[in-house]
Image (tube, rainbow, N blue to C red):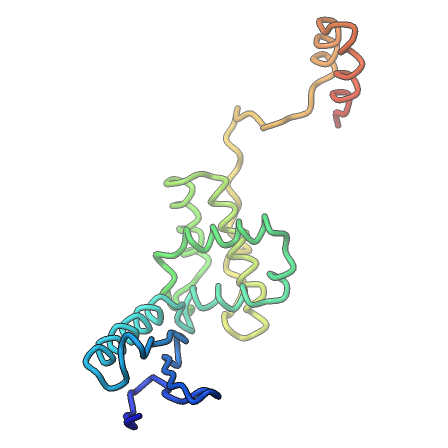
Length: 201
């Protein structure tokens, strides 16, 4: 095998003496049977994988940015121990904030977080806005002791109130509603309805 150095790639022989080649940063391998070492096909494949690696790097959160804080928090043991549902919620919040993930940490202030909170409330919902606020508060809380951000800038942002008149999903039955249902239920089902519904606060 001709000895050629290709920047970013490791070329070696495995324990069976078979030549191997892979990209160090991404771990992507080049099939040397389809693209023989040193051939035009080989260098085309190297260029393709290098471009993929650069694209992946561009997508990674940058240190010293809001996205960088997200990455630090997602690596915390605290996050790893959360329920699957809460993990999905926090990832959803990070996705909502994806377009501003490159915001420098030094530019983050309480008024900025409040403005983000307001915008999400208007463009999505009051509930999502509050979820994002809570997520940011958790991120900042764990990044302050690490010296990555000055303080928890989400803590003093006032949560959005639930819209007036908005019904609560799956609310408990009121006593008068239980009695109406029991009066109208067939005798065989009355006991079952009562045992299910008589659990109001």
